[in-house]
Amino acid sequence: MGRFERDIRKKIEESDQPFNEWFAERQDRLTDFEPPEEPASDLGPVRVRRRTFAWLTGAIAVLLVAFVVTAVFLFRGRSQSQPQIPDLSFGEEGVYMEALTDEEFQQTLQQVPALSRLTVTERRAVRHQQDDSTVMVIVIGEQETAEDYYFVNARIEYNDNYNFSEKMYYQDLANKIVIGDTQISYGLSGQDKYGFAEYRILSETDDATVYWKVSSVNDLLEEWLQLTFGN
Image 1 (cartoon, rainbow, N blue to C red):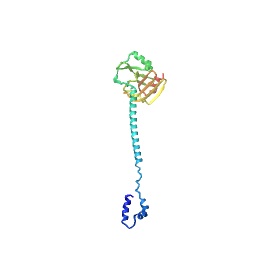
Image 2: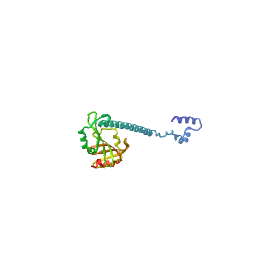
Image 3: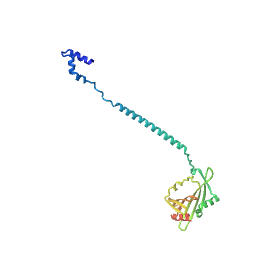
Image 4: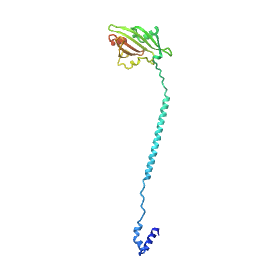
């Protein structure tokens, strides 16, 4: 007999009804008494999910860091493995000028026969300060035709690393034509010091690249182009 039943028996004995009879009448209600069940806890799966999520987050972060570090090392290694091409360009500060010799002028005429049509007033050689090599030849002259009169400045290139001060103005000339074997780009640059129309012309062949500056008294550049490159 448990303590609960003894307490009940003690109270019943104080009454007139025997305990056995009293207990028999109430046995069904007394035996149905059970302690309340605790609700099932969902903390276990929640904790498992939280731990799993935290583990996945940490793993992803580690993988991202490893990826970034690997990419940085690969980029540095590739940059270091590729050879750096030195800049060989130089400007007017790296050259000097002197008179062009007769022999050099004859060689220039072989490369650019159109210069033989000029009445030459000046000819100069541009040489590299480091090795005295010729990087450019400048021929200045005049040309008269039945219809016009031209003032011509021709720069014959021998070293394409030489960037003279006006070279940039020949990069985006508006007009392009081909006469014979010569590719020609040209455009109006303005007026010369006498007020005549002045053009910049870039001519390119297998033998020579020439930067021209031509002033036309009657603005007949088409005539000069055909006379210079047509034959």
